[in-house]
Image (cartoon, rainbow, N blue to C red):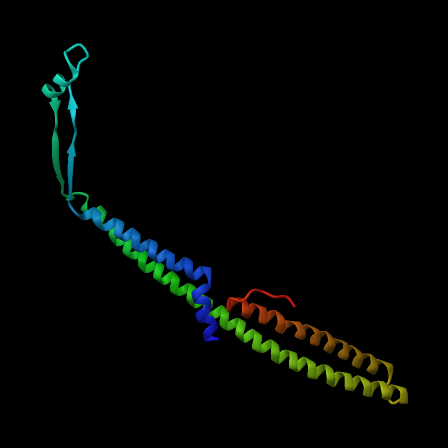
Length: 196
């Protein structure tokens, strides 16, 4: 069972989704962290005052050429609490994603354990129903023979017949229950469902 649980935790999409959710939360934290750091910006532009009727193009470029350059430093002081709150929210999202993944794995393990127990129980029920059907068949044969001898009445024969029919129904139900439970258990093991 532990092998099937390990396989399911490596293959099931809900576990993969939980792992991706953790990575997404970590990425959000990495994106939020730089917002509290100072920023340094460099700006610049190139322009000229070219006029169509004001002489030759290249002369104007040489005389009217402008190259302004600017440098600015931004230090987050007032908005710093907003950015720190975003970082703390991202950390909480990571913790929540980890808890969600742990919960998903726990639920998956419980489902696999329940499928394993159901499979074991269905085999036991099949064996029990088979024995019960055989015993009821023998009882029905004995009651039928007693009816022919006249030692019991028709009502007792019908009661035993109904008991035998019910044991056949229980046997048929118990016969297919292990097949279903085995397919469910194999599904968690990563095997495709195969109806035989």
